[in-house]
Length: 610
Image (tube, rainbow, N blue to C red; front, side):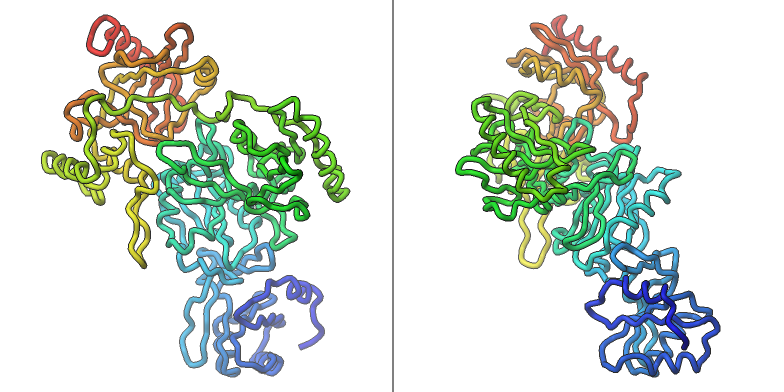
């Protein structure tokens, strides 16, 4: 067949290994005839295992015709690509849905059948559609290494984004990378991402690694990983940036706001956990994969190593955090901070000025132990709390909301099931095709009673997937109830930093089911009045006729902050944003301020609840 082409040799050396097949690269010359194919048959090493034949240059003959010919002559199954394979990082080859049928399996004496689209062949591929599909306001689009969840709206840069994502993560036979969002676009609805997760078979979910290609922070400042874990009631894993390469030598690069890769990150992956109780904030994410040279230090939990008897070094998003044990109250702030675009940081906890000098000495010794290249790249600094203890500045402060009416306790679980069934009997239109409507309304009754927990989700029987989480049931139940458009109010207690926080936010997202009243803030204790113009709030009257004024906003509702006053009795004005509202509408803002001001004046003038 002539001397080997050096380019073909280099191409062959760079191919990924195949655990199931013997890989044969056939660099056939132009115009290859049957005699050339016969020589190829004689050159193939003897054996009985399947062959994956990769053609080193485009064939003038149909690739499937050649593959069938080889299968018949060799008496072995031959896998070949029908279509134009796209080289992928790590030596893979992927045939996209617009390029051809993909890798086909040709057994002797049998017609070819589809095998996969990617080489190496991912175990997760059969569970994922081969063409884009809709997820509400988002689209899921296949990638060589997984899936891209992107906005459904047209984007002139979509092809460039796709190419960047296809050229980043290495195709893995076990792990599936799921890129979320697009640079410059609003964050995807969490409900769409949760729907994608819940559509996956349970066995596949632990293999998913999310990648924030668009905004990682939602309105209100919470990380997408925290909100998603709360929404699905399961741990979810997020890469800290764009993976490059594979194995021990692979890197994870910081993703810029425009999607371009930045510097390498030493923390690679974090696990986000759902809340342990309901309601309540989620635990801080835990570093599950990193490259920091901490292997000589005892690991007391994932990502946390003992540095001294009472001091640990913890892997956080922004670098390393040298802190005392137990963790201080401001730990969530330190763990939530984003990485510096220019440098990795080793931060000494400054919660106690008395301990700071010792922590700094320990941190300096730690940095001196690093390899020279890393030692010169990190910056030593201090980590100080920037908000009241226990509250991260980027997250919406939780205002205590009214609970169940005093003197009117809600019934137990069996009673709630009966109340839900009775409400459906009185109002058959509530169900309207909703799945398991009684269970959904019972979740609303648990919220009205101040109860409910992710663990309270309906459990599965052996061999069946788990049922919906409490948050999902609550959302379904609330969507069954009638909508209340118009002014609502509530009263609670906020300190000055919390009021300032609201004044600084254009939009806040409440992950919980916020409760308000159509008759205003009433005489509940508190120094702050919230006036909220509802567009999608739900009246609970069908479930609790004794409180016809009560309104619950769905978990994850977004609120546009219009005014946040201070003083003896502060007033915060907000309007609920419609689910489809993607940008701030000043006309709606002005109308909402006018309607809320009029309602507040009416309530204060003596109408019920003033």
